[in-house]
Image (cartoon, rainbow, N blue to C red; front, side, top):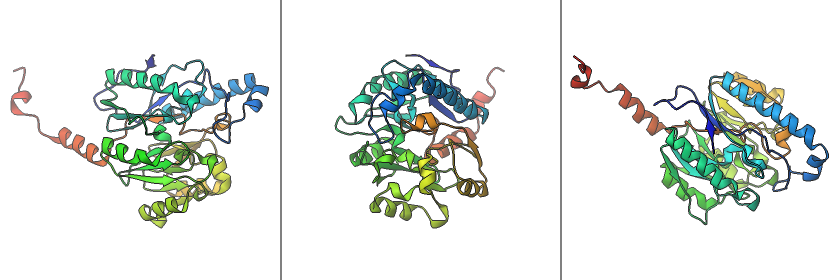
Length: 317
């Protein structure tokens, strides 16, 4: 296992993401409604070439926006390793490792474990946490940190279990709000919901049960609810990456773009339709490593603001 990037500084000045090149990406099995191995096999060479181009374009866009990108080596036989969002939930330097529901993806678990151990050695991760054996959670694909509300949204029902809410809340010290999913096309929460830094929440109502919608409405004021049309949901518009005031996604309609621009965001489109054949897009292909909760960020700022002790200040005289 080898992760390529410069060594971490004490406090990374830019957002940092983990990505995995699509060298072995393919649709070779079907575990969600988007995946059709027969269609892929018919044009495998061309589709793989496009996947390489699209992934590299996404990486360039993210780095061009000022973010750091760490990459882990792809491995043969693990075509979905490219979807690093599913590796873990990362917050405050803690990485809660994923436990996959489907056997086709379970061999990714030790690979991601080794990757986080390397990140820990480099000072990018402080602690690695394993969930109980009977709990399924597919990383940040189903567990999304909401910066403005300082809570975690947990998509459950298709890949992750509602039982993950308690151990995740305990491990990360934050409230975890379960959102049961209703449409198998939107099997991970990040395919149907994106929490924006400004407090807006992009979501596709058709992806959620009535109980989940009630929870969203309870926590998100009407003015902050950005409902997706069915067309935008099918474009994976919710599967977006936020880098500062930019929102990176594969594609969206003019109406959604206008709503986001009115909130002060720059919408950056970079086509990722090849990955959508496997049920993923921009957010699925990235894992944010540097998120800090409000309490942790406040503590860090307080430490930085403390005056230097006198005996240290005069050291070297």
